Amino acid sequence: MTLQTTNDHPQTPNLSGGEILKEIARLIQIAKLYEDNNKLIIDAVEAFKQAVKKSSNGSESVSLQMFNGRFFLQEEKVPLLRKDAQIFNQMLQFLERRSIYGFYFDADLKNTPTKEILAFVRLLNLAVQHDDPSEWLKKELEKSDIHWLSVMQKSTLTLDEESMDSETESFEGLERKKEAAKKTYNYALTSVKEVAEKLLSGKETGIRKSVRTVQRMVDIIIEDDTTFFSLSTIRVYDDYTFIHSLNVALLAMSLGKQIGMKRKTLEKLGLCGLLHDLGKIKIPKQILNKKGKLNDSEFEEIKNHSVNSAKLILKLKTDKFRKADLFVSPFEHHVRYDHSGYPSVNKRHPISLFGRILTIVDVYDAITSPRIYRPTSMSPDKALDLMLSDSGKHFDPVLLKVFINMLGVYPIGTLLRLDTGEMGLTLDSSQKTDQTRPKVQLLNPSANNQYKKGNIIDLAECDPSTGNYKRNIIKTQHPATLGIQPASYIL
Ligand SMILES: [Fe+2]
Ligand SMILES: [Fe+2]
Image (cartoon, rainbow, N blue to C red; front, side, top):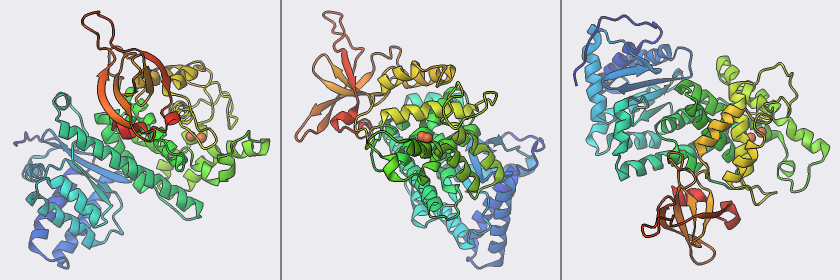
C-alpha cells in the first residue's frame, strides 16, 4: 500500500498520533533484538507509556485504528507528515499482515508491568506465524491476563466501500460476528456485576472494564445491531438486574445510533445504560422480588434507587469529567416526559436526551421481561402498543417513534402463532418493507415440552396458485410463557 504524503501540521497537538505509532514501531524492533531487562528496551517501554498517556487527551482509553491506508487516533485522522511516512507505511503493512485494524489502550499504564508490555509486543511479532493472526493474538492476550489493551479485528470506522462489502458477507463471517457479539455480551455482564459487587462490599471500583466493553459493543452496533437485538431477548430470573442493565445499554445505543449519535456519545450513553440501576444494589431482595403489592415504605425504598445510582456513580474511581457525563441520566430515568414520576424535579428542569432515551428503553425491557413475581410478561409488540398510548406523557413522542420504527411491528424474538398451526419467532424485520410480514424461525414441538428449530419462512411469501399469503399471524405470545429463550433459537 502506498501513501500520499502532505506537509500538514497536526491540528490538535495533544493527539500525537505520529508519536504513539513511532513508539510502537520502535518497541516492535527493539523487542526482536534484546532481552526484557535491557536498558534500551526499558526506556522504549517508558516512552510508549508516555506516548499513550499523551494521546489520551484526558480520556481513560486511547483508540488507534487504521482505515483506508490512514491511521486514526481517538477517531481523528492522524496528520501524515512527510518525515513519518516510512514508519506509517511500515506499521500499516505490519498490522495488515496480522489482520489487525487497531487497538484500544488504557490511557494510564503507569502501574502496568514492563514485562506485560513486552509480552504483548512479542506476541504481536509472533502473531504473523499463525493462520488467523488477530484471533490468535486475542486469545493469547486473554491467556496471559493482559487486559490493558484490546485488539480491533475490524475497523470500526465506516465508509461507503465498507458497507458494500457487507452485502456479500460470507456465512462464516456472520457466524464469527455472532460469536464475537456473544462474548462481548457475557463480558459486559461480568463487568457490570463486578462494579456492583465491589460497591456493595464497600470497596472502591473504577469502570475500565465497563468502558472497554461498551467500546466493543459500539463497534458491533455501528456495524450491525441485529445480533445484539437477538441477545437482548435473553431472559433469566437470577441475574435480572444485570441482564436488564445490559439490555438497556444495548437498546439505548441502538436508538442513539438511529438518531445519528457519534461513537463517543454512544459510548457514554451505553455506560449510562449499564449503570442506570446501580442504586438497586442497596434494595433488599425481598422487596425487589416481592410478589404482592408493595407497601408505602417499600415503594419509597424502590423510588430511591435512581438517586442512589447517581450517588454511586459519583463515588466511582474514575475522572470527574466522566462522572459528570454519567450521573445525570441514571438520576432521571424514572422521571417521565411530563415531569411526573420520581424523583420529583422542577418542571423547568429540562430532561436530558440520555434521560429521555433511558426512560423509553428501560420501560420496554422491564415490561417485556418475565420476573420472579410476574412469571409472564408482555409480548414485545403489545409492549410497544401500550407505550404508544403513553406517548407525550411518559415518553418523548419523537424518540418513541424512532424506537418503534427501529424494533419493527413484531420486534425480534416475538413468538408468533400462525394460521397454519405453526409457531415461530420473529427474526429481524426492521429492514423489511412490510414490517407486518417478518421472516420467522419456525419452532417444532419435540419431547418434554421442548422445541426444535424448524425452517426459516417469510410471511410475505404468497401461494402462486391463489395469490394469497401462505401464512398469517393469528396472535402473538410471550416466549417465556412456553419456557422459550428466543436467543437460543435465533442466534
Ligand atoms: Fe430503574
Ligand atoms: Fe431499569
